[in-house]
Image (cartoon, rainbow, N blue to C red; front, side, top):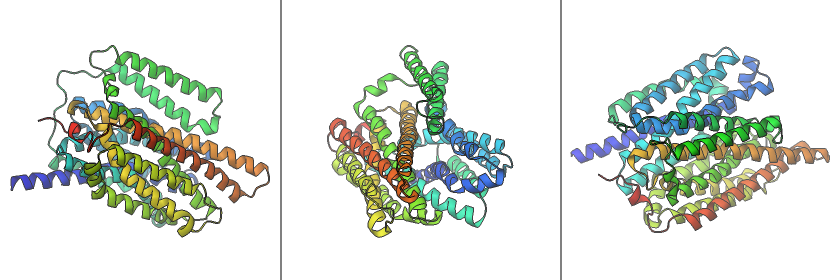
Amino acid sequence: MMADHAARQRWLALMVLCLGVLMIVLDTTIVNVALPSIRQDLQFTETSLVWVVNAYMLTFGGFLLLGGRLGDLFGHRRVFLGGIVLFTLASLACGVAGSQALLVAARAVQGLGGAVVSAVALSLIMNLFTEPGERAKAMGVYGFVCAGGGSIGVLLGGLLTSTLSWHWIFLVNLPIGVVVYALCLRLIAPGAGVAGQRLDVAGAVTVTLSLMLAVYGVVNGNEAGWGSAQTLGLLGFAAALMAAFITIESRVAAPLMPLALFRLRNVSTANVVGVLWAAAMFAWFFISALYLQLVLGYSPMQVGLAFLPANLIMAAFSLGLSARIVMRFGIRGPLALGLGLAAIGLLLFAQAPAGGQFMVHVLPGMLLLGLGAGIAFNPLLLAAMSDVSPSDSGLASGVVNTAFMMGGALGLAVLASLAAARTTGLLARGVALPLALNGGYHTAFLVGAVFAAVAALLSALLMRPGPAAGLQQAAPAH
């Protein structure tokens, strides 16, 4: 009876943690739909409007590693709750913002809170579920929230903006934040941090500044020019700071990120694959949304509905099927298969015409991408967290989240640049705008397919083989 109660409490705790993560994931895309309304209401210029998105990305990408380590040192539940409070209060500030400066500043604080929540949620889940079969199921649920939350955000953003106002895309976070905070206190036991260790301040400062400068350089690359002194200088300075960070980590007694972590083959391979996979996922999600809206003329609500089949497939795999596949076939095979299916889905989108029909030119690619993501996400997360001790689980979570963030941001910037360059070239040759846009998107989809294919190849060649590889090692010893 007690065992049943403990199991039920674990799964309830997982739902609460995933609700907190969903709130963060939604916020990365829900804003995109509301940008025209925000621009008109607060008198943003085209150039300044981008900071409503970039301010969030800047702090989110910069503080993931530090957030994960803070969870290890001071207790994962405590840091998670602090992140929820910060994110919820920042959402309130965004929702009542009447000026550009307040909205952008509040978005930056939102990113900080979101980074902390994202960095430690995975650690809490790994420590709640120590039995391999249960862990695989739990990670499947978490993977679905991460993979499917973005397209849910588009649908919800369209609904709230069209029926109420843009303010509600932020205010909707308030009751969610309160519920997550209250239920976390009830369902998750407070955990102690790592005793006797101090925060590596020099490492924290250098890596956070490095990541923030890298994100800043990437998100402004299209506007400033990829070969401009500003972009090259920022990326160069970010690289120099990262080199300094690695030097510091090799010498300090209690490093922010022990470099020995990357001697673990599954962990290092999973992070490289995560960068490529995030770039491919961003190609699918953002570029296909643009194709649907600007080429096929879909409304924001229709765009969200177009992603629904992929979301349903991801839900089916993430909420049960993926766990059974991992327990039967291990990590390597399903990961390579899922990424390969995603590559084929992106290739289908690269063939979609300007006058495409949903059933013929959109749905098949969506189904393959939903299937690929549903199969691949769970083993990728398990591989990234395998072989890591409980005391370093927050760090490993922060590292894989950083890999996704940087891969997505860099991939999207590169793919958007390639698409824009191709579109400009076609327009100069007298091609009509819809056809020129579609030609640019084809280029982005094709490169995204290459990213996914390379990730599949690396998974097949480098990931440790064997049934359920990494699941047994991933379980903390008791």
